[in-house]
Length: 184
Image: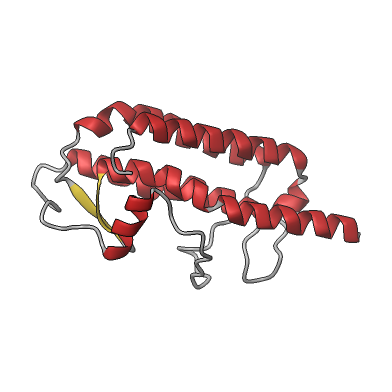
């Protein structure tokens, strides 16, 4: 899967964003911010998580790899989990629970417009970085907390994998909203 090119990742994220914008049309802000339980995220929080992870972690790490002047992570490798994820080309469809905290728990969106603008910002940043990714040396790597050391190309691909990983969560939340709506 590591031979996937940045253009393919960009096209898949574009498709995911298109689906998300269509989803937004189906729901009110009340539904978008409705949580199944105190421990679970709302649909809006999932969207905010995708936006923030892409802009402030994944795409930011590409810039760090690009700007490296010293061979920082070349001797470092992906973790076993990272190897499995990149060999499969996707994050396993498992529910990952992290303790609620300001650094991990995404905020509720203020509006649908905020979500749309955030998604557009992700696409714009991906478009800006697409051509640069191929020219960043593979040995320039930065650490992912679960997957080990990733190159710029792998960070770029991770945006797409992360969006696809949260598709199941979005589907579960859509079912929850449908059941909630019919119970009212």
